[in-house]
Image (cartoon, rainbow, N blue to C red):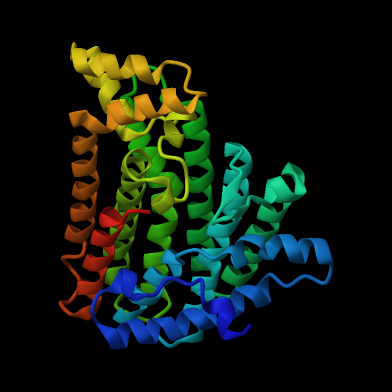
Length: 341
């Protein structure tokens, strides 16, 4: 793959901060990860080869490999196993996107038509399965402990999706249920990424659990920030129509907060809920609901909750030695709640 093929990758400085040498070193490793991703997804038949590379070629921030390569700096970061571990977590993430887009009927992913829009649902689902199998093959080379961690992560990814679909059980707090869904669907794989960096760099293994907790909390913060971005960011920045989650009736944190406030007698919240429950098929109705929710104090409260989770993630890093890795992880946590897309 040539340099142009690498051009879609986000700069590690986006996540790492001001340490130019660290960012350069991780950028070099990311290029190796990218080459390996293309090698692992190579197929002899045209259809599976094309579909497997569809989202890979569309780009993405490669946040999970970035995080893994960063935590690997707590040990021997240049070991071959580090690249394989980064490839494995990104393959799992890519595979999950094929399935997510089918379930959400999403028309676009990373600026390109979603795979199911091009080849249909069956091919998209099978491609996701194929990438999961490729991830398992890479992880198997890393040993039984890696396989165990991946299996537990995969279970949480699926359970998170199922529990989101089922909704909170009766007599269960809807907000606690939502946070657990985010922890499973998003936090678990980010946690594994951070954990793998420690596991396979031969760092002090006592640091694996703190960075795992960090990763899970950062994942929750990331998704909570997405809730706010969907409400408050213009389509030219985020790449999707503001308020899409509202139209799709996704129970995001601001929505859960405003419904709880309305149930407690807040008249302004009740007015917002009335707009949310209306027919949102027209752009005008969607914009009215979006603007009302964005302006209500519950949205600021939800933003503060995202920041709280990022701060809790940073607090989990107390056992780590002071230095550039710890500072960069702090920057990583801050970046997920200050981004605009």
